[in-house]
Image 1 (cartoon, rainbow, N blue to C red):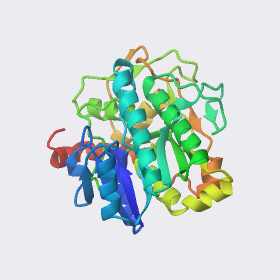
Image 2 (cartoon, rainbow, N blue to C red; image 1 turned 90 degrees about the vertical axis):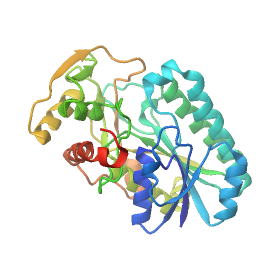
Image 3 (tube, helix red, strand yellow; image 1 turned 90 degrees about the horizontal axis):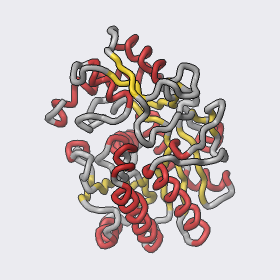
Length: 334
């Protein structure tokens, strides 16, 4: 099938496009290139433009009437930046997505697979969260994701749109062939920071938050190899109608994670074991908008998607390190 992938020049989008191709499907990329690099598009069908450009969306569907689903990944995603730039986050993540969804409905392209976030969940004592647990998004970024979930859920009731909402946990690692990966010159996420410190691009890795209510005082996350995450999208696209039929609703939320929690200190230990050397570290308070964290209960993804992770934390760390060596060749910078 053909699948429209918004944000398909980005980190997760480009890896998902590869996974779609490996499963025999054809991704059609729509990306503004605001952040994602053109190099990640490779030789795929590509439209440069805005998700809110209705004329462009009509042209894409006119030229590819056999598009069967849309994977909507295009978004601003940096939590501290969202605290500083709330207008830009609400405009690009919420207002523009609303235009996209309405136009897709008008065009009869009803299947939408939406990238949401585990940062929506309220803090739980045991950190394991199910899709029905309370939500308490604590940054503008997270609140944009929650708003879009509600928009999709309401539109799925009132219109022909149907939605599978994937709440991502913490994607790490790279494309298995090292053709794409993290592209930010200084990644804001923890593994990117670790790679930079290990490669001498930073003088130390900063542990942000050391007195949090976790087993060692540092934030807890559920790290999932981006290739596993990409394959979850393929499974959801392939089983779209079946998943919603099983759920008995016009929309459904599904956690996609490894199903286990790893603290920052535990991640540091695993990283040093894979890397073979110690990484210099320092400690600092949490960043604005940072969450203590959570990990996924994945019972629903197993039941509805017949999907679970196959790659380990160590696999993801090794691929991130390998990408750190490769990205100069792909992107022209380290």
